[in-house]
Image 1 (cartoon, rainbow, N blue to C red):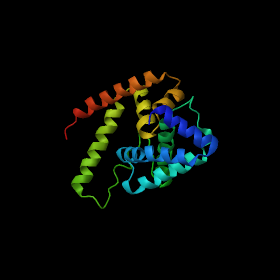
Image 2 (image 1 turned 120 degrees about the vertical axis):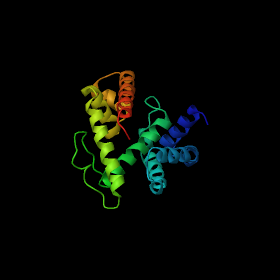
Image 3 (image 1 turned 45 degrees about the vertical axis):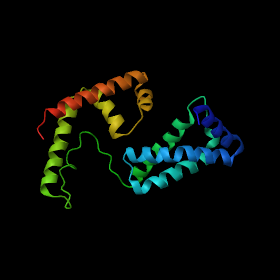
Image 4 (image 1 turned 45 degrees about the horizontal axis):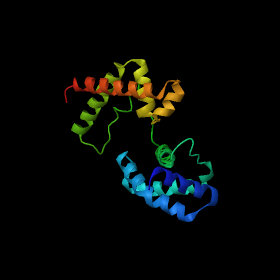
Length: 185
């Protein structure tokens, strides 16, 4: 199905609660969502639930879909992404500030001492590399990678053009890569 057909299916679901159109959307997007969720770090045992919950929300909130604002694919993946983030936070995950150093130094009793030492060194090296970025680059890295915000959300928050955010994030990533290559393994 092409994008226009997918949008038409979504509109049929939104306007008429068309079950056949919903089934077509599910058949098309469920495998793609599942694959994407796994690639982006979701636990494989929770992916099916996330996909199912995404489509439950799609059915319930179908009337909110606006094809002038986003394609159906973008809308579905955004819903899935937000559910994944909510689940991650709801599971008690600790979101640490970039400056937080004391938590990384606490040993996990299940790990060997070599693993703990390597992780502590890597954590130290990453903090050191982040400290060498400009404050603007650190802010972009924090928003994108630590707070898992989309580029468009960052652009809106910082009142910057989307292309500028993407360019600056690429530059920050290249700089981090360069800095981390300087540290011995």
